[in-house]
Amino acid sequence: MDKKKVLIVDDQNGIRVLLMEVFSSEGYNTFQAANGRLALEIVKEHSPDLVLLDMKIPGMDGLEILKHIKAINRDIKVIMMTAYGELDMIKEATDLGALMHFTKPFDIDEMRIAVNMQLGGDSSNNRFAVGS
Image 1 (cartoon, one colour):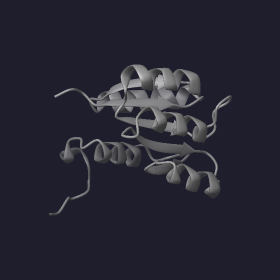
Image 2: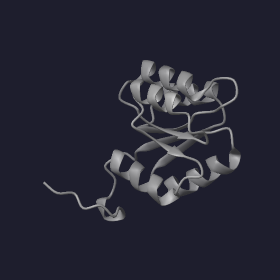
Image 3: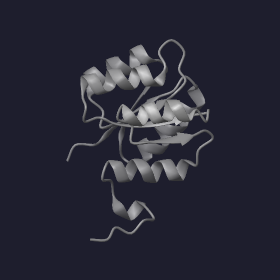
């Protein structure tokens, strides 16, 4: 089975590095982008399964990047990250197809579990029982 691909889009290098380490250790192929232009190039070239997308990125904001990602491939799952409690932007992101959002600073374990659940990862890694 091919490794699932996760793209991390954030203008803060520390957050990208942290998330790359976490999701690489979970067994995902990880990519990173500090801006929207690079993020969209990676989406076109590598077609990630899931994108962790910061809401506030200089040049092209998260909503604009989200629209472009969904225009390229509607099946790519997107989880938004924001340091702001802008409910209108979060609602718009959800309307555009984002699955959920995390507010910074986020709990890395909660994000890891959410990504594993979205990508159907190893269920032994998460704390939730799945019933039939």
